[in-house]
Length: 326
Length: 240
Ligand code: SF4
Ligand code: SF4
Image (cartoon, protein in one colour):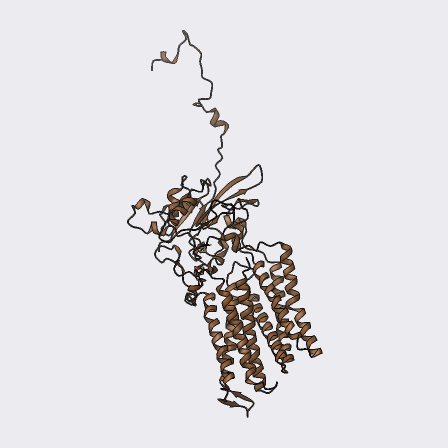
């Protein structure tokens, strides 16, 4: 497939936005049960604003993918059958929850509604919004993943790994960002978020390597024989029916050399996994405030490469019909 | 339920592209607006087509065969392109099974083209909406046209009658009989799309002449008996 930058930015930006929200609420959860230090409400409010900015950025990027962006509202219609439609509904819902979560923290509307276990767990509006947000963030990860995983003849994508990768990689970059944000404002949650970021990154490494290995030995079910229905070993296309390019040659081929593909794969395997983990650990050792920021930035760059490769790696069966210009 | 479809006879398609040009001519002139071309007379011309004729060589020299292979939307009975469309712009008509795109609803997200294994949907570069074969819905459903003209433009144009058109759910239709009796097959059956369009495989056309055929008594190639008979009793003299 042709890797479109609109979709690469859409999926990586909203992934980081959702992950950051998960991180913020994890922080809140831990501080309610007093496992980490209480944070001022501004921490959550500004964090939510950051998460919202990423989600809005992703949404903005997605518009560049559309031929007719002015009609984008129509895309909510077919949620019963289309994962794309579901994503289109869940993304604004996510934005709304993140917005409310931030506003409630900012305004200090945190009077407890319910106190459980002698004050061990206090439930307020932000807690409920946060729980809802976590749920919606997960649904959004699944919707995004299923857009790709549900196309069964794009065999590289059609696997549960696709969804796992979206969840873990998005969560990892969100927690990295939370660590970077904590380092920037100088609070003491850097190592807390950093630890979770490393765990998510390692989980992502597991599922991403598993999907790479699966795809390396993938046997495609379609071939030229089934494509034109002629049972013969020697079939060569002499003409695809036109003399230059077409939508079919532009949209479904990456037009890059195998070397570039390999290079990008190595690049993302280094930039997404070992480098950020090392930087987080090093930052912990040196009590550095810049290394976590660097870790997030490098991992995000790596994720752009990862997403690029994700698209380029997928071989659409329609390509069988478009082998020979003449 | 009716399922209109094309059946392509690979025995007689000569790769003349008459279906391609007649399709373009009819559909670019219709109510749905032009099928845009870019650089039509320059290097790298590109444009929207509903139908393309491809050419394949099968076997290795000298025992090769050239197969011309027209390809357009197969109007699948279980079209994977329809449920993925977020706007409902892609749909399958209930009454005749034709898969269509509502150009006024399409947002040009291209997801349906990813979800079609056959590569027959093309995004129009200027209108930025998804286009594909409509089976000339504005001909076949137009009851003001005389009956014999209620056919897709490509079917009318094909000089060798390689394109049959009809209802594949009617067991007695020309297309159903052709599929049944001439080994009609579907493309990429492995994905369960159940294409309505079918292809008729090449048949062997070798002629086998035996010795007997050449030596038979009434064979004009046997030497004529040119003896001139004189005096002897000939067959004419025998009185029956
Ligand atoms: S051939 Fe492709 S575009 Fe046509 S109905 Fe089947 S899946 Fe859809
Ligand atoms: S490109 Fe148009 S027809 Fe295709 S899935 Fe998107 S909205 Fe539907």
